[in-house]
Amino acid sequence: MLDVVPVMPVVVLDDLAHAVPVARALVAGGLPVIELTLRTPVALDAIRAIASEVPEILVGAGTITTPAHAKEALDAGAQFLVSPGTTRSLLHAMQDTGLPFLPGTSTVSEVLAAREAGCTEMKFFPAEASGGTAYLKAVASPVPAARFCPTGGITLASAPSYLALSNVGCVGGSWITPADALAAGDWDRVTRLAAEAAALR
Ligand code: 3PG
Image (cartoon, rainbow, N blue to C red; front, side):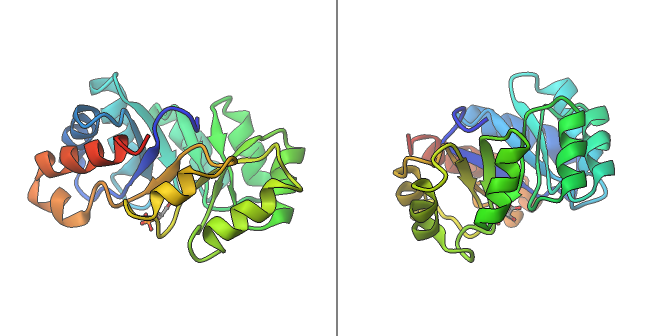
């Protein structure tokens, strides 16, 4: 999951009609992956629409915070799952779907719990607030098998310092799909932001 794109677009969608155009705009910019967060009432329908109408994008469900979310996302056609944090039941529910997933971690104990469950790839969230690149550098030595998608507070300007780390495969961020661009239906802007992000690697 971490080696597909340098930046995973994290998307909060309020309007179901925006799902397909935003997915197409990301693909046009060279980022054929979307993490659709389960934070709005339309999120599952948006995943369903993207999965059926934009087959060239890898569509995942983010903000998996309950075991039920994992099953609902699978049923909606999600191809991967991302959680902001990790509990035992959340880990099991994501594993039970058979989908690739990134469990959220922000402490070494959570990283070790994810490793015990067989995960090598995980999200580091909230990245900036939890220690940023300094944390990731410090964790690389004791837990070299863990690789991360840091997310939370990362920008186009700060992404390269994360991507330079040996244990970072990609970063996540919402800056590629800003709320005002979505509200205005400015898909060209989303494509431009995606292209800038895609060029980071
Ligand atoms: C997430 O869920 O991963 C974050 O909300 C994204 O963080 P950002 O908005 O700071 O990029």
